[in-house]
Length: 124
Image 1 (cartoon, rainbow, N blue to C red):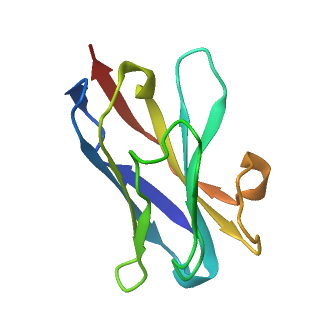
Image 2: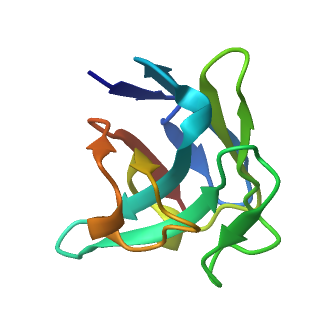
């Protein structure tokens, strides 16, 4: 059974930075593509970033390119999302997700496991 636990969300001022973390528990972390999604109040859960199993490839939503960087540590079963130059539009609950057997998963349905989310609030 896979469990994902996000951490690092908090209130931050516009222009600031945060680093989100996701702890993976279960077997075979290195066989899962790992993604981050976010959901603002009243909106859908949107793709933010994904990193492939080995960490060799990453992809980002256009809205976060150049500001967010996804990484993983397969020795520690961890995924990270440093976020810079935050704006109020980045405020959302951020979810970590794990996808098995997908090339570069960007859609919600491609993911098999989800964390409970961590709240990021950016004040103007």
